[in-house]
Length: 441
Ligand code: DLL
Image (cartoon, rainbow, N blue to C red; front, side, top):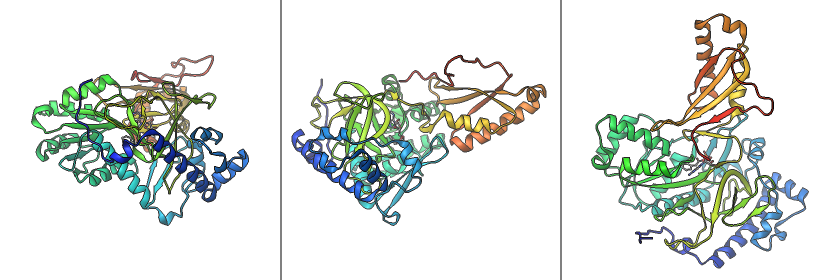
């Protein structure tokens, strides 16, 4: 493989000899388990029931003696029940939407914010960004961790950040061209939308802008999409992964060799397990990613089931980092859909539909990603007979109201198609409610 220019933010930690790293991880793991047992009633009860404690952790493999933490645990302790510090010690709060309409809330102490900035500084540096860069940050600012996570990392490396957030696509193109943006942060699907808008405006992003690096994540994307984005934008595309429960963006990122995403293992301990049995799987085996935060104070979390499916790779990387890599996320073990970076659960859709007396509880969700377009979410649902018989004007009005209710719950626009009763195929076994045509996973 040809040699690449490699920059490393924190050489001492990111290239630490494995043995030293594992010693550090073990010490931090024991400490984290002791801390959550002392400060979070949920963990105190969980470990008492399982009859385990930090004393049982004598090696990193011993982590498998501890029970898992699930998204549902965070939901049932909404909003702050899983926090290990008084709310007043938090500096920032973020949240993501969920199945029951309840959000998953995460919070950061000063020290957590520092860890987040550090891991995001590693991300930028891994992709070759420096303090000289003009960073166009098109991830959404707000409760979503994308915007602010990328923002604090840009500040940390001393770059200039344009906090443009999402939307107003044409204006974004003008900003990129006129301000001289060199780095672009957004979801991969939004990168395609940007490139399409640029073409419509007669702007060639490869020659009319200074873009050179892109950090794309928050949703699954394929190698083909990478090639497409790189060709249209004239930049090098890096995959970045993370989740709000663990820290937000910054859990792992590619280096210039693009042979998987290096995990910030000194802060986030990764495991791969069999999602059915919960048993630990080794390197090179496909399974569900599980993370333990080793250093977080606000919302420490032990053995969190991410539901993301991937493979860990242990071979040393030409970039010199010793941190293990995970392959691009292949999809999820559960049914959560990610539409334009927003998490959507089929059960949320069902919940909205069942509120309408005018509808039958028969529906199919179609997810599409047409070439160069954002993901579309279509909900096809049957009207009940008396409503259907009233004709087009009534159906149009119902459609409008369902669309509005869906937008309010999902935070994403949907196409609603109300069809004749009986026209959606019935199933003898489990109903297939979701047809994902994006070809991922
Ligand atoms: O999406 C954090 C983030 C923001 C990552 C910006 C990268 C860039 P959540 O909203 O909590 O956090 O969603 C987390 O998104 O469990 C994965 O299923 C998915 N995901 C995140 N990054 C990637 C990626 C942010 N690079 C969920 N590839 C995760 C595939 C990803 N899926």
